[in-house]
Length: 135
Image (tube, rainbow, N blue to C red):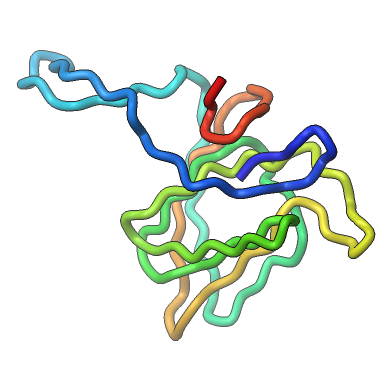
């Protein structure tokens, strides 16, 4: 999820594709796609069955990792993405501008008959500026 220059949120499916084969701390080599080093805060959330978070922005750029259950995210451009365990979402929809329909940022909610348990990793104060961090 990202915000364009007009303040509208969008979602793009991105691929982690900058892997290098390297050992860490003396362990055997493994494939790593290192992200920029930043201070981070980990927050776990439990969204009850039927939960809907109406229009809001992510509080900071953050990775959202579904641990159990399923949830959906809808951006201002109308794109809706459903996710569950094994999926990742990078929420960088800060600095959105409220549109004519009152939408700002994104809305999200649970899917199905079980709560969605999410782990969020809130990143530092970097300023998001492009989808998939492509130049």
